[in-house]
Each structure stands twice: as C-alpha cells, then as structure tokens.
Length: 104
Image (cartoon, rainbow, N blue to C red):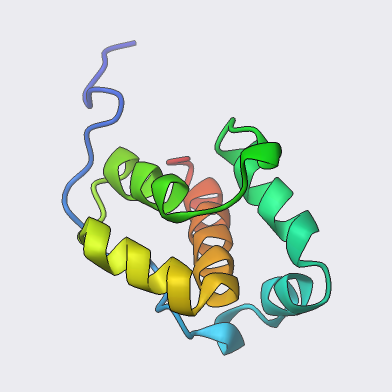
C-alpha cells in the first residue's frame, strides 16, 4: 500500500461547524450544557490528552494545528475565555465529523 499523504499534513481549512452552531448537533450541545465536565473528558480522551489538565486554549490550539485549521492563538483565547462551552462543543462536533470522514 502506497502512502499518498504524509501523516498530519492537511490542506488549510476551517472548523467544520461554527462556534455557535448548536443546532448542527443538539445532542452534543445538550451534553455540554448538562454535563460539561464529561464532555471535556470525552474531547480530551479523543485527543489522547489527560482530562485532568482541563480544556483550555492550548488544547484548542493543538487541535487546530494538528488539522491545519485556520485561526490564531488570540481567537483560541477569546473562544475559550468568553464561550468555553460553545468552544468545547465545536471541538467535539469537529472531532465527530472527522471520525465519520475517516480523517481523525
């Protein structure tokens, strides 16, 4: 089997859903609203990180860098500082979609 794409090399893209696109996946948003700590651990586990370290801008930045998602540290900071629940839900939606596409 020939390797046609180097691991970790992705074309520049955007998150597959917006920060406030709760209606795209109501289940994830309800999960985030009613059991936020569980959602955080789920996202950290998906990324092979420790959920005890917490969800913060660093984890969002690592994810963005890994999948070459456009953005900046400043945007990551603002998203996690002012809308942490929406930020974590966006990460989970993106992870789930990438799993469906076979690129996670």
